[in-house]
Amino acid sequence: MNFFIKNCKLDKEKTDCIVVPVFDLCELSHSGCYLDKCSNGYITSLIKLGDIQGKIGDTLMLYKIPKIFSKRILLVGCGKKDEINKVHLKKIFKNTINILKKLSIKNVIYSLSELNINNNIYWMIRIAVLSIKEFLYKVIKINNTNVDNINIDYITLDISKKNNLFIAEIALKHALAIDYAITSAKNLSNLPPNICNPLYLSRKAKELSEKYKNNIIVEVIDIKKMKELGMNAYAAVGDGAKNKPFMSVIKYSGNNIINNKTIAFVGKGLTFDSGGISIKPSFNMHEMKYDMCGAAAVYGVLIMAAELNLPLKIIGILSGCENMPGGYAFRPGDVLTTMSGKTVEILNTDAEGRLVLCDSLTYLERFSPNIVIDIATLTGACVTALGESVSGLFSNNQELANQLHYASEETDDKIWSLPLFEEYQKKLISNIADFSNVGQGQAGAITAACFLSKFTKKYNWAHLDIAGTAWKSGKNGGSTGRPVELLCQFLLNQSNYIYS
Image 1 (cartoon, helix red, strand yellow):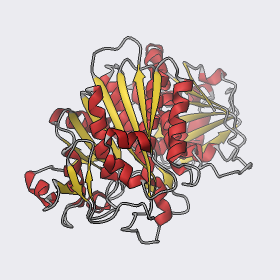
Image 2 (image 1 turned 45 degrees about the vertical axis):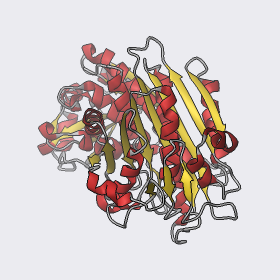
Image 3 (image 1 turned 30 degrees about the vertical axis):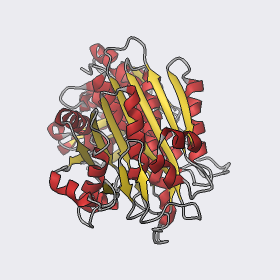
């Protein structure tokens, strides 16, 4: 599917369909009025029959419109003109694709540039492309040759004002790069764990250095090297598994770097989490293949940065590992010495993600990063606290937290800040080690973040707990690709891109 930006002469365009907005109380848009005038009032004559009211979700397909070269016009309800927001826009685009994909339509023009929010054509274009792509995404079945065919080959986004064409082209470029990032993260996350194991994850990272050889260098650290570095917590989690851990370090450097700031992302990459000796219940354990969605998100974000050649220095770490029971598995009661030198008493081997991450966070110190963001499907407690729509945010720096909240609001990828008060830190006290790896049964998402915070004293740090938002359960479930767009937007903001 190819997207194009164009200032169209709508009545003369030879296409299969033109999508035109109709607002509440049957008010036509400017493009609708133009086409209606060209067709001698044909469109309004049909609207008067009452088959469309203009509410969001309404659609009406018109055929053989007089003096219009397009084979069809699809009228789509957009609700009240002055109340359209980003959520409404996504629904509008998804409604149209739901109609168009059922028909023999290969070429479609969207004449919806009047739906720009706050007069910002950038966001209208970006939301259009990402919404269409999201709605058409399908989980790839293993060894399945029957691929769902989408008839639509070309989508043209009509820009009614020529002075908006430049910013619209930028929006399209960004949207396609972000979609590539989201789709790559989804495809990686949806793979079964017998394919996507820690070694596979490291190979996917290596492929980035081959594809983006001018911007990306990748180093892979195996379990032997981890132990030499003193990453005993990380290594201990993987000791019980046949598939040993691999940590991928992706170093990205764009052209014309705007400052000396280094931004780092760390993704929890538990390609399968059985819980180890503290084994999980069997119900829905198959979904623990998604415990690497944090690493998949980092993988996607680095793809977007390379596609757009962002003028930044970025370090991405994919902390690949499996947590399995076995004769070499770590145990409740063990005391591990982390790479930082701090000791941890293991009370629950199913609190393994923080052990992998703590050594990854310490390893990052060698790059002297200014900003570090870790992304992890870390705790069921975060799902209990915030549900499946909102990710948890923890940070030791208010400015960084504010920047992430701003990117969240821009992308409608919701996050919510939770505290790191000293009272919660005390829940990790151990009488045999510096601290334990779990708290005392309360505020589990917070005590997990408190654990990580002990290893982030040398830089500004944020932790995103995406346990509730990274995937959806059920027959039609799968990876959501969150929070890739949020993090891409964070990087675009760091790059000082201007959208309007």
